Length: 267
Image (cartoon, rainbow, N blue to C red; front, side, top):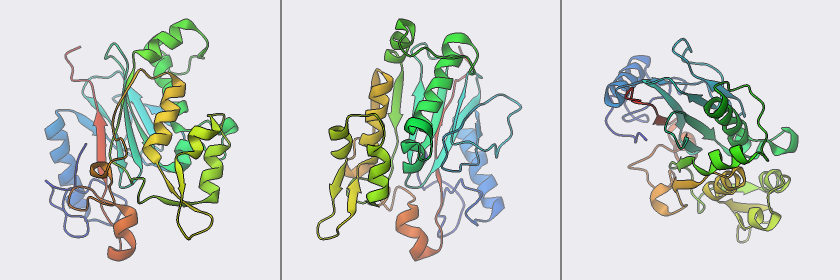
């Protein structure tokens, strides 16, 4: 997970902005991305993220700018990367360490807004990720009641990166309703929305916990990282993290960080 330091961009993108769509100097962005690739020892592939639910299978010929909000691969030296500046990044690895994935989970993608049965970006990504890992083809149909699926999912691990925290993420009734419309336990989802005192129809939302509920339903065995505490909040940690909600209106724009996961070529 990158932070906001270690790059060459100037304010308000200071200094390690990796986003090429936020009106930063393109040369600065290229330099920052080259520094990241050098640090990883792998090629990070940057998507054109649209707050949707699509996941793409990364291969050596996949170009930067491919439209998707998640990616997965078994190709060593090719890093799955998602950019964030308040949305939640989720990194996944299967139990054998042969398949990795990165997911950009803003509230729209996480809730599966407009999708049948609230099938969100985590569900779509995980199914393709599973199919590639189990069957060698990400388009294979998955039987979720199959013992093999359940055992495989239990061996997977997820890591949640920094995002807008539960004391900063103000949302309206429409966002809460989108999450309550899914088949997750209503009481557990409702607990992720705390009414904002004195502001009818407004809530503070716990994005990491909403993601954890979905990962638990998918059967993911271990979940690490963001637990909703202050250190993980992009809005509250201005020295460490970029935050669109904190800075865009005040400064005109802000940078983007990246969460990356890759196979190192030794497998």
